[in-house]
Every structure is written in structure tokens, then in C-alpha cells.
Image (cartoon, rainbow over all chains, first blue to last red):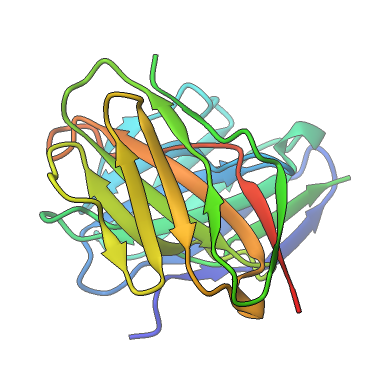
Length: 114
Length: 117
């Protein structure tokens, strides 16, 4: 198992374009999380899935953001009509249920909106 | 409201010395979990150590230990025998309702640690 994988590592886009990021969690983990991290800040929670069900969404997740996890395995995060304020590192994490629910993070997707 | 505070934006430590990174938290929930993560320049968040609010003893993981002072609401990370590879951003995080329905972590703003040879 190679851990949590995120693609692409970097994305540069023009304002108004749509972008999609992918996250492949650790295979036996049924919980998946998306976080956003801006420069000089800690990660901020965006949304959380248990299997294919999206159980919680942050108020940070505007209507332009949508996340899916159709088969309870990989997840995608789409941002429509990107704005410069969307520029950030988007981190994906996964965990199993039970125990102390340690989150394993991927290396993130760095989004730059020009 | 739940909050994590890390008051040290940056710190220097000499190689092989110990260093303490401060973290205070605020919550009204009696059940919570505290975590420390390391973020090197590659960007990946690496789990270091965990402390449950009901744990009687301070957590230890190799060179990492967590100085948990519940009454003061502090959860400082102690790194012993610093190594050059310890240079990174360090984040303190908290999850409320540990074991319950809430699963998101609240992170502090981080402390940048630089280990000098």
C-alpha cells in the first residue's frame, strides 16, 4: 500500500475555468476527508465521506464546490468557475473507523488560479 | 467555540537538543482528541502523536512526547534529540466528540521548526 494518492500535484488554471482533483485513499479505509490549506495557515476542513455517503460539509464549501465518492473508493473534488481566492493546497486524508481515527494525508494538490 | 492556538510562528533548535512546541486548545466538550502532525516541504501531513482527553498518561512515540496539562488546556509537543530531518512545519489539531459523530480536525496555524547543525 502506497498511502493516500492525490492527482494532479499542481494545477494552474484561469479564473472562471472548472477544475477537478482526484484522491485515492488507503484501500482499507472507509473514511475520506478533504481539507484546504492556504499559505501560513493550518488545514481547514471541507467535507467528509464514510464509504460513498457525504456525511458532513463545511460552510467553506460554496455551491461552486462539489465532492463525490461514487463507489466508496476514490473521491473527486470539483471547483466550478474558479476564483483567485480558490488558490490553495487541497489535501485529502483517509482513516479507518474505530481506534483513535488517525488521519493519513496525501501530498495535496496545489491550485493556482490566475 | 473550538480553537487551537500555536503562539510560536517559528523556532530554532540545535541538532541533538530537545525542543518544545506549544499548543493550547479551547473546547467545552469533555471528550476530545489531540493530535500533532508534521508537514515537511513536500506538503504531506505526517501523523506524529495522539492524546485522548481521558488518557491518564502523557503519550509518547519514539522521540516525540506530548506534555498534556488538561487543567491548563495545553498539549505541548516535545521532540528529544533533534535531527536535521525534523525541520518542518508542525501542526497541533483537535477533534471534539471523540468517537462520536464529528470527525473533522481543527488545526492550529503551525510552528516552523528549523534544526541547526
